[in-house]
Length: 168
Image (cartoon, rainbow, N blue to C red; front, side, top):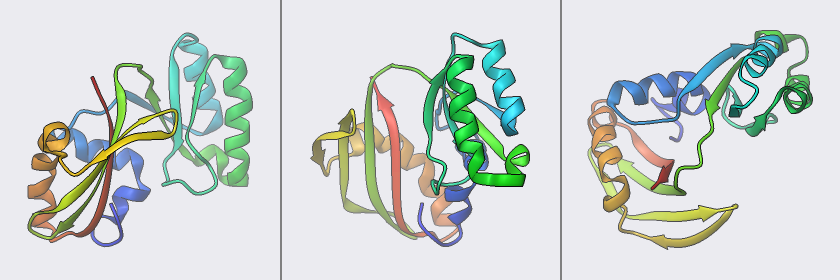
């Protein structure tokens, strides 16, 4: 979600998860770790679980990465946390449980403070390659769009929105 009243949703991934949950929009199960040591302990206690690891900011220098196992976690977490210097141990880390249940899909749309503006751009992505784009997003994203609409209308949000998910 672009700048404006909902800019915080771009920068606060943990807060966004809570908003989505409150709206009844499904998202992967997750845990929150505070810094490197807590994140590493989660990997130690769940050595077979793969996680998508994200700092609680939107993009920037610390990109999301997939990780499974303590050995990989040490290296990848250290690299991620090195970006934050003395604040690394205070950086909240969102760890989503990975799943391979479907095809990654994405929607780019615009909301005009009262409704969605067509056309919408939707793509199916495999390995970073978009396979198809279409403007008929209602079949796959209609439920999510309907759940977001009252919130966006209430706050008079006007701007672009990108939504990603898995379809199976």
